[in-house]
Each structure stands twice: as structure tokens, then as C-alpha cells.
Length: 286
Ligand code: SAM
Image 1 (spheres, rainbow, N blue to C red):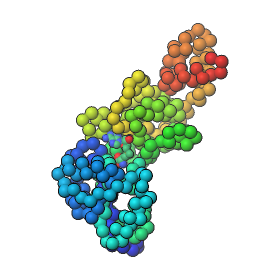
Image 2 (image 1 turned 90 degrees about the vertical axis):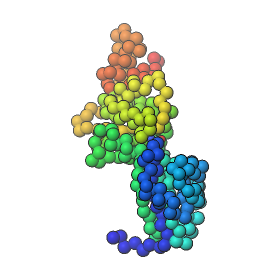
Image 3 (image 1 turned 120 degrees about the horizontal axis):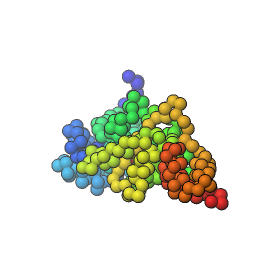
Image 4 (image 1 turned 45 degrees about the horizontal axis):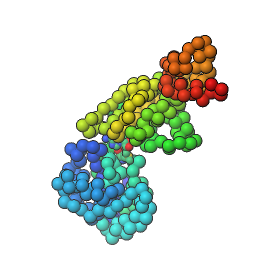
């Protein structure tokens, strides 16, 4: 018991399917029908979901990344009047790389009851099918797109002693795998989970170097989660870009073509061919 005092209102955090309507629980349906208002990212999307599930249209209030702060006061007022409010996102569990965190903390701070109807989340679904250990794990969500923040997070993933779960868009999944290979070393294991619970669900398992090869030249489609294995004790650190460049240059000096040298160094150092090739191009005077 926390000893918290509860005002009248109740905020119910409700998970919705990540691609398969069959995963919508009966309790989630009952809960969305019982509340006074449903806070959702996109009223059209949630309206359609309710209609496809054959549920009566409920009052919907948009709470998305760009208005969550302003909506908090309005929702707190409703909770203060004793209303029951549900929170859903477009898919999966609200507040996990989705809006909701602010609203949940504000409701708690104001003394309202916060409960959940748990259900799908891409992170947990990917973790359990990855086969890279589940006892302890790290949720990374979306990585920063560039700059020192991205490099810092990649370095943390490289050093982590538990598997890391990363959300990624199809447009960026290949470059993120290349960056991961560069930081973690190409021999680190990864699971690339795609379109979980949907018709074309697929989980590809291998090393980061193999994943880069696997996706090379293709345009990945659909929603992706990457699960990167933990760093194993005694694992050799990823080679620096400088080491890769020097080794490609050395082999080219001995007569290999750049392509051939990059392929050999990639295999030996466990980095992607593309990384070895492009690094060699950026070396001074090459
Ligand atoms: N809160 C959601 C959850 O609990 O799953 C995640 C929301 S986040 C905005 C969306 C990201 O989740 C996608 O870019 C993708 O990385 C991942 N995702 C969502 N559905 C997925 C699916 N069916 N298969 C694989 N990844 C999925």
C-alpha cells in the first residue's frame, strides 16, 4: 500500500493491438465502453478501430505528441469531476514511445486512480521471440537520429550487459543496423522483428554483419523492432574506423581492389562490407 490519497477520477491505460484485431481483449472493449471519454492519439484512427470491433462510438479526445501538455489540464478537470477516462495510443501500449507519460504522471500527482488494461506491445513481443534472453533487458525505444546523442546511445548498447530493444522505421532500419555493427562489432547477435502479429510477420536472426548483408540493396517494408544481444564478457571490442581504414589501405597496397579489400576486412573484423568500403573512401588521399 502506498498510502496515496485518491481523488474521485480514474485514468485507465488501455493497450490496443499492434496489427491483429484478435489481440484486442474483451476487458479492453468493456473498458472503452464504460468510460466517459477516451483519450487517443488520432480520433479518426481510434474511431475506425472501435467501428471495426463493432463497439459503440465513445466520446474521443485527441491527445498526441504535440498537444499532450495542453490537454493535461482538461483531462485533470474531468478526473476532478469524478469521470473515468481511458488512454489509448494508435497501437500497442500507451506511453511506450507513444503519448501518455505526461498525462499519467499528472493524474498520479493529482491523486487520481491510475489503472491498466494490459495487452500488446511491440517491445515485449519482439523480446520474447528474439531468443536473446529475457531475464533482464533494456528498452531503447527510437534512437536519436544523429549527432553525439545517437553515438552515446549506440555506445551504451554496445557495452550493455542485457539485450537492447530498439524501435525503428523501415526507412532507417538499414542505416541503424550499420551503425550498430560499427559500434557493437559485426559478430554481435541481433533479431530483426518485422510486422509482428500481422500477415507477413517475420523474425530474422543472425549477426549484425549478416543483417547488413541481408538487407543490402533491399527497401525494408513494414514496422520493425531490433533486439541486440548483450555484450558478452571477454568479447573483443568493435574495431575503430581508423583500424578498418588502415587494413583496407594495406590490402589495396598489396594489390587488392578496394571492393575486394573491403570485403576481406569486413569478414575479418566483423563489420559490414559497406562500412569497410565507405570508410576506406573517406581516408585522406584515397
Ligand atoms: N507503444 C507502442 C507499443 O507498445 O508497441 C509502440 C509505438 S511506437 C510509436 C511504434 C513503433 O513500434 C514502430 O515504429 C515499430 O518500431 C514498433 N512496432 C509497432 N507495431 C509493430 C509490429 N506489428 N511489428 C514490429 N514492430 C512494431
